Length: 169
Image (cartoon, rainbow, N blue to C red):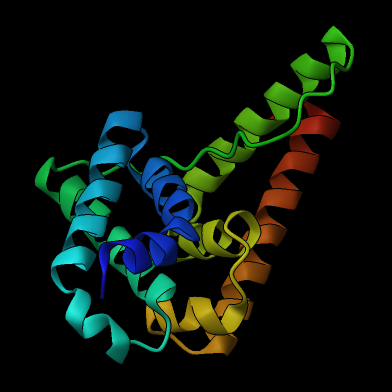
């Protein structure tokens, strides 16, 4: 594989790799390092890439594993997933504050979910992978993906409604 073909192939998903790494490692610098490390490993093994059915899914799995290894090395017990990719079309200041508060609460609720549910929600709702691709990446069956996704979304919805209705979580 030539350099140009490799760049063309990886340009389609390198931003997804970065977003996943950012969600797991929190720091921009560490996420950039993780993304670069995964791309470097792919480049070193470019001869084997033709044998992979889905290079993007393989790269996402590599990123996930690399990030988990980094977190284990730091002995960090707390993974932080924060979703802050929303369009700001200049709503009122009150609406901005409410949206930020809701987003913070979703992040806190996500942190309380089991690790598998957090990862599945990240991959499905944020990274837009379908259930079959997620099942392949996490090496579980599709039914388990659907169940975990449903339970995770339900828990987020319930806790967020509880917060908005009663002011407590």
